[in-house]
Image (cartoon, rainbow over all chains, first blue to last red; front, top):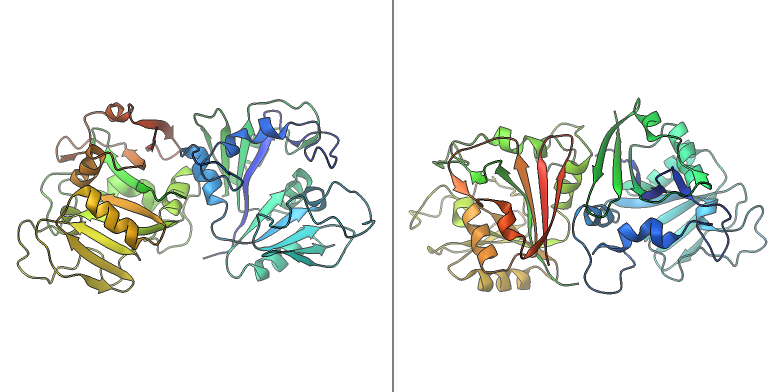
Length: 214
Length: 214
């Protein structure tokens, strides 16, 4: 089986923003309300952070359930890892995810400001100042034959799309407009020369765009 | 996590038949053409029997990909296991699937005609003359905490639905009419008092009905 680079369950607003303006420690998605953006995922039975029993088991659930399967490494951008910009002031920040991050694989953080790798539970974070192609080669090597997840954010996904490294991409379009922030695309049809697209709208009102390489 | 009883990727015709009339060794689905019924699944990248690279990676693929995950045992009816009816003439028949069956778990075959268990590769077939509830209890015990797949055929699924033992059910409706054979339902809306339903039609023209317990 070929090793794929996959974007999974990446949520954008109807007007194409993956994150709002003004990311801070208190507001990882800037002015965007994460409850509104991600409620479709949080409502599913398989959502990783679910604490109560129950949850939906339709299309949205197939999509969140699939996230954990067959992934051996993740690549993310600095702005997904941290609200800080520029050189690291210190190494105290270890991501948003607490002592047991939800990745359970090596995670490669793309940044111009390198720092030593560290491990939390079964997730090791590595910091790379390199090209998307090189980061992908490193992640594939670490993934033990499994696929690599491209975790975002928007800037990182755009860089990998530009380098034509993305094999499959699931983008969930939440029924909300943000107006400003980090924009994934002007219009998703700009990808159709390179990708097949299947578009599905289920009970939750979220439209799921499934892209795979032509 | 509760252990679920799940129907996965069970395909019926537009008029509700899961199998045609006149099952034989040569025609496991009777007069129904399996190529037409199951082409939606065979076209996906994750189809278990795929031998060539390639394949689609949209909704249909999420559904075939999900089949292998989180399942610790399967329950099937005698008519899915074998084209023979009545008492076993001998024990030479070991299923349709060759030396390496695609289940990789214990499989419980419901039959009024018991026979000894046997193992092919990592699949062990057991034969039970018992109620759906008891078969499910046995399968759950064997599943090691994972879910149980209800593999069919039609008669078996109907029995488990009648006993209200099914937790989730994915039925694919292929764009073909059979006219006669084994009928799953007159109309799927008869299940809506007990199940949520999400209905999705993707690029392949197959309509996927996703049911989960209310």
